[in-house]
Image (cartoon, rainbow, N blue to C red):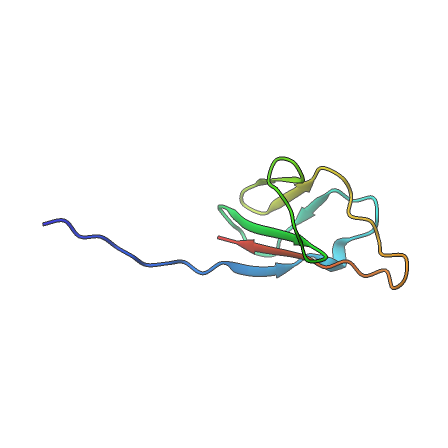
Length: 82
């Protein structure tokens, strides 16, 4: 008898905002992961390999450093991790 497991793992949401300084390209997540499901920078969905790469268990490397916002210094980097 064939059994199929349809369990869906929900991604862990992590915000890397505090690590943005305008020059940093390598970010470390608090949670280990096997896969980056989606990565957003200020609401813009980034493309893996063009915009970033990841190395399990907890490193995301941007192709370019996220710049500090000129008005309030805030950038929101949202990582959805499995």
